[in-house]
Length: 286
Ligand SMILES: Nc1ncnc2c1ncn2[C@@H]1O[C@H](COP(=O)(O)OP(=O)(O)OP(=O)(O)O)[C@@H](O)[C@H]1O
Image (cartoon, rainbow, N blue to C red; front, side, top):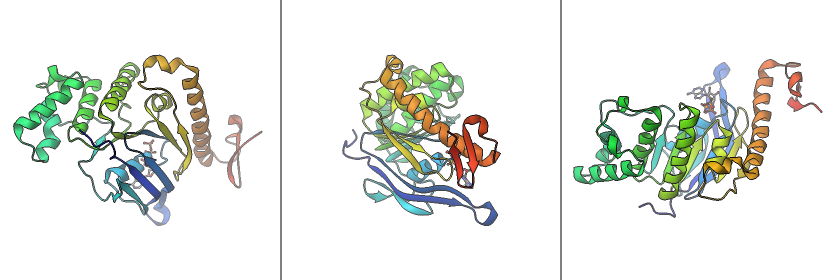
């Protein structure tokens, strides 16, 4: 079982610059975010604003140019078992059965065979996948593969789950079911989650708090609390509280997406959108 006081992620004044000279790209600037223990936090923002870059810093796959990322006060310098990662691509090993995929991290950690089989079977049972333990990934649907990806990330009992567009490749119906499964699993495991999505409804449905990022270089534009009760269910998506939050977030994202496009389209190009490009960048036309 996880320690409920652990899983505090803190990013402070993160700046990331790729390349130099003409190829210099400022991806993130002055980004500070916190994910509290047991909290579900989403990052949303226009394409290319640096969401994946920030997540990969917390995962330990990349280092910031400036600033620090810590987990429970310790600086993150490399990947670690206390952080599970789930990507949009299923990234399961096709030559291993479902159960052996789930066992993989435990095997790497030196957990004895009988113990890791028992853990994998328990988790597969919770995700409704025990009947498929001896199947190979190719024999399963996209939704099942992603459930296995989540189960595999949870197998090593991480304090934090980092998810980069995990449902991006799924059809709308499967995606909605996966959101319910994830919120139920999160409720049981009570770990911290940092979740990236392009889908605003998805972020509201799942999160306690949402950070909205600006267009590149990504900064934190807004931090929005989601005070919807838990456990969450599909019926909530029709409530006024839910749709009001979605509209508010959509307006924030639209502003940033137009700003990003405006920079590409140049003066006059944004007039039809109620925006214009001036010497100080993009502004709203009244
Ligand atoms: N290794 C790299 N070298 C150079 N530039 C990079 C590298 N990785 C990312 N970038 C650039 O940094 C910016 C941020 O990329 P990132 O993938 O983090 O954005 P994102 O918000 O996750 O985008 P999307 O929503 O489209 O997935 C982009 O302009 C991207 O092209």
